[in-house]
Image (cartoon, rainbow over all chains, first blue to last red):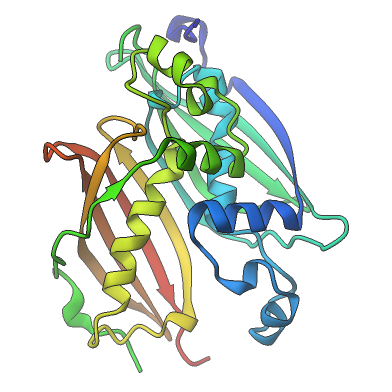
Length: 144
Length: 148
């Protein structure tokens, strides 16, 4: 598997982009896989009763899918050394049309000595970013 | 009800151990749209030097949740779960989680802050394997909404 070479990278390079279509099925699937059965993620009546604009995607689902283009770019999930996000806006998932989430991954910092890079994620839904300070530190050394 | 400021600095006993199953890793991988063969195919994972399929980075949340549930179940936290919103989340890895790992989490409340009517509780779960070696630390900040 080929590893991205640090010497080929510049701060500001877009290294991965992806669009993910979320549906209510995606939320039920994530609830089961993660064990997070908070009903605001699958019941419209419960979401409305606590004042939400609709059923929301789990923040951890958004965080989980947003890093995947970076994992594929790096070639190995084990190259992710650190990953952090701030949850700034909810993703409302319509029962019929779902929600479209787009991800752009850009080189934010290069640490040539440590053979690692910081990749900054811009994650967008309905033309607004939903994650703040979404940063992935990726190790690009030949051997892990 | 407000968050008990004396929670800051408290460390809970280590959580019950969590055995990472191969099918659970695959199920979680599908749920977060993970496409890497290392998440799904044991042979690809072994070829890459792992003992079994590799969990996506955010899988550590499953182990963290057990520790957080124990925190929220304490009688004196003052945290009303219905008012809790996930503020931010971080994972810092020594190595990725791999199927077959037997993990335990030790949670420490590192910070309790008040911001207007809201409180922010930061909990750090140090997750180790069966040998006691560090795998990942999961840091979660919960925002507890106060009366508006």
